[in-house]
Image (cartoon, rainbow, N blue to C red; front, side):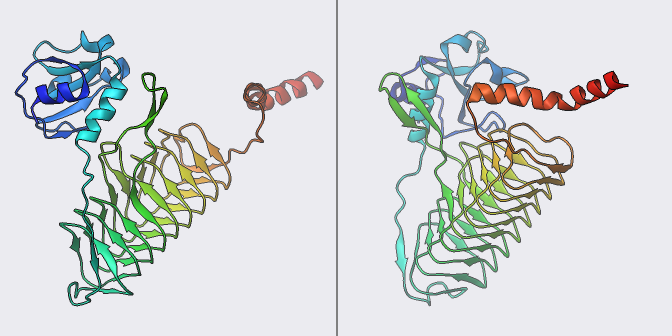
Length: 329
């Protein structure tokens, strides 16, 4: 739609060409023609070539930093405006067909009926359990096994030689929300990315992998994932990484190659880990891991301010011990 139409629908001020055609939303990492990108605050402008974008959505505070020739929309509440913008581009009209006739998809074997959307590509020699659901524009490679009740949401890409066990949901909506001051309630931000799964990947039962906010969630070649693992939006899992049961990886994390993540590990958002990292079971990862090695982060829960004091002194224990020993000498 035209930029002027977008501006009217999401309630913003328009600067620039009102007739510019906008076909999609793009991320700040990947400018695309006829797309609009979203800038939350001035931090996003650091090192960014703003002139690569056809259009920008921003707030009043940074609107004066936009180049004069740039097309941009200015919002009072940029998060709320972006949520409305994303909803306009969200595909919500999937029509599923129930498949019972095994002659329709001769290249696959399925236990009983499954459900499939439009424009789906399925490779050779694959097996589907009962009640598998496949959304629109899904691509599935060769030698893929989908257990009972597996869901592949719209636009999911699955490589060759992939096993996804029963009950797993690939491409669920990510947990992106904001608190609306005008409505005094939590509002969801629609996600526009997809999930891309590489080759030779094993995903256990009852796992959930969320689609990306704008860019994609990516699972690299040779990754193995145990049961009941949650991988949030925009996460990138490096090749040949192993993830044990009940791990939770928050949004926008980048996990290195050949990592081994123990059971019940929690990784907070935007964390990066190096290649060849081992994280002990039940650890909490709250900072980047920049070098290979084995890491453990276990701390009993307590009042947050008390925990901060304890954590501070724990980091000093080695120095205190050395100081005491020197005093003894």
